[in-house]
Image (cartoon, rainbow, N blue to C red):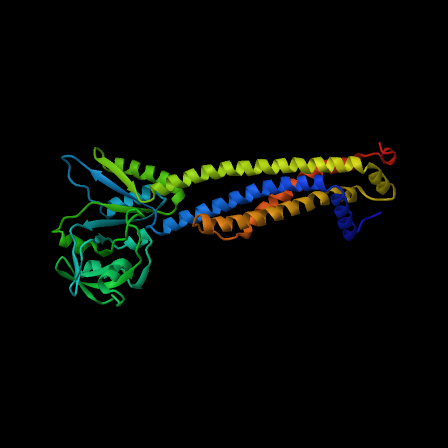
Length: 397
C-alpha cells in the first residue's frame, strides 16, 4: 500500500515525536555540526572582506626592486629593460617608472603644504596603481612629450590647499615653479602603512620631474601584480630575472602587501583547521542519524513486515526512514544557521567592528552539508530494510 506525500509526512512526524529525547539529541548533533561549518564560513567571509578593504586602501599589489652596484654605473630601467621583465614574468599586470622628489614645498595663495609626497611618474602609472581619477584627468602623452607643467593631486592635498573649492585648473607652486592642476585622484597608502594621518600627494610627468631634479633620474620601477595569489611566485620570478639582467649588482625587493600576504596565509591555515573541526562535528551528527535509523528499524520491524505484506515497495519503506533523517537535518541545520547569524551579527556590532552580511551561499552550503550527512548516514541502515524477510518481520524477528 503506497503512502501519499501527506501520509509520509504525518508518519514521519509521528515517529519522531514518539521519542523526543532521541530525536532531540540527533538534531542537536546536526545543529552543532552545521553551526561549526556555518561559523567557519562566516569567519572566512569576514576575514576576506577585511583583507579586501585593506587592499582597496592601498595601491594595486606591487613590488619595487632596488638595484645597487658598487663601483658600477647606476641602473636605468628604460623601455627595453621593462619589456624584458614583462616577457619573463607573465603574471605582471603593469610596470611604471617612479621618481620621488625630496624637500617639496607646495603653495597656493599663501597656504603652504610642506609634508607632501611628490612623485614623477611614467604614462602607465595609473594602471599600475589602480587609482581612480575623481575629477579631471590623468596625464596624457602630450604632457610628457611637451614637458607640460601639469600635476595631479589627491583628495588630502586638495583639502589642505583648496578646502571645499574645486582644484581643477588652479595654479599651484611646487618649489617655486607654477603647475596647473589637471586631475583629482583618490588618496591611498603609498607604502602599505595604515597608521597615522594620511599625507597629501601629488604627481607630475616624469620628464618634468627629472627636469626639476637637475636631470638626475632615479632608477626605480613599480611592478604591479594581476593577482595577490601570485605574489610570492611573481616576487621570486622578478628577483631571478633581475639577477640575470644585472649580474654583480645587489638586489632588494620591497612590496606594499607583504604583511597582507602573510596574514592571508595564516588566515587560510586557521580556516582549514576550523573546517576540519566543523566536518568532524557533522560526522558525529551523521553517526547519530545512523543510530536513530537503526533503532527505528529494530523497533518497527513488525510494522515494516506488515507494510511490505500489503504491497509497500522497498523504495517507499526506505523513503520513510530517509525522510525522518532529512527532517531532523532540516530542523537542526536551520536552527544552527539562524543562531550563528544572530550571534555573528551581535559580535560584529557590539564586541568588535567587522564587515558582516548574511550570505545565502554560505547558508546553502551549510544546509547542503547537513542534508548530505543526514541523508547519507540514514541511507545504508534504510537499505537494510529491503533485505528483511517479510515472514520473520511479521513475527518480530
